[in-house]
Image 1 (cartoon, rainbow, N blue to C red):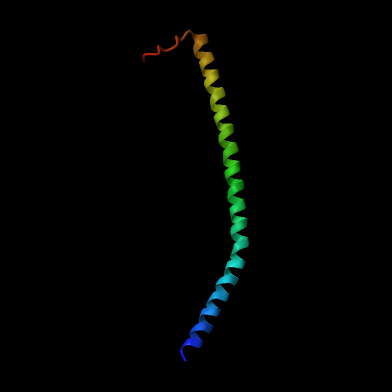
Image 2: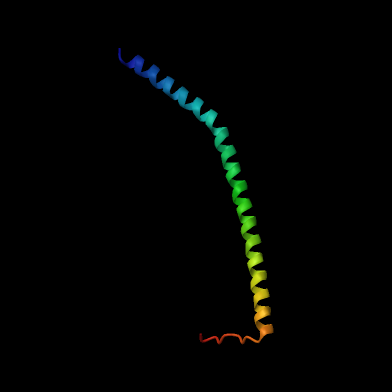
Length: 76
């Protein structure tokens, strides 16, 4: 006799679980899309910063050579 209420309880819990999954799934996909766009933006910013650092390094090298600095030896 205790079997029927257990089966009904399991069916209700399963139905609620499926309903919650269906409701949350869309939000999780939207959140995943937002994180992907954020990662893309950070990647572009990182590339931009690296390009600016490379340009600054090149400019500093040109200034140093113009002032008469000698390149460092390879042995340190």
